[in-house]
Length: 305
Image 1 (tube, rainbow, N blue to C red):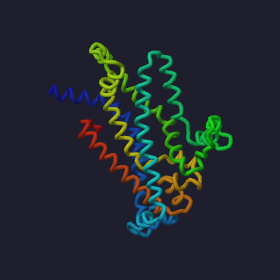
Image 2 (image 1 turned 90 degrees about the horizontal axis):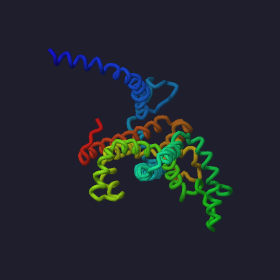
Image 3 (image 1 turned 60 degrees about the vertical axis):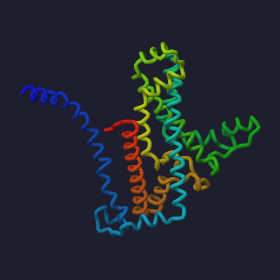
């Protein structure tokens, strides 16, 4: 009887917490699950005038065959994977390094100032940043090329050359987003018991040894979590950034799945083909997330759910 009373009291106490989750769950269902009905377009010769559930012609996997046989589709996949993978790698390593450096600072005001400064770019839209980077990377009067020429180098067309475009996208995205990852890691560092650092000092550990044996193991779970979540973006190279900065001369190195879908779906009105590409991308991302989760559970003994 007492056990039943305790369980009922616990349920009553947790009810407000469950109700707080309700708006998020509703939004998730409306904007993430309901639109999944449109996946059927990938298997149809879709005519918008007939409606989503109208008498559309079912063509099976024809849209997928058409996409995979396009001469430039392999290049699009290659560009997407190269750009996305390097963004993921730098997006994990750079914030971790910056977190360790900031954690070593003793001046609290300086530490908070740096945190704020590096976090601000995360909130800026690529529509705004696109115009800024076009100006500062301009081959004629951009400040970056002015500095290069000042040291005797030649002007580089960062956004108009296939040799430099991918690298420019990777570096600028890392600059914009590493502040967010740094804040997440710093929050994890604050959860480390200061007594561990004191014990390490007593045992004669220097600063590097304290980082290696206390700080990194202390945030290991967060590193695994960030890695698992980021692997789902292996085919997500960043539409907003690429769309605002690329141009026809760099299609060979900068055209990714998202911009490819934009041109085929919205400009050429091949909705079935565009949906097929989107479904292909989602399946690959789901596989990577699943594999990374299983790997995290097996090698790091970490459970996300």
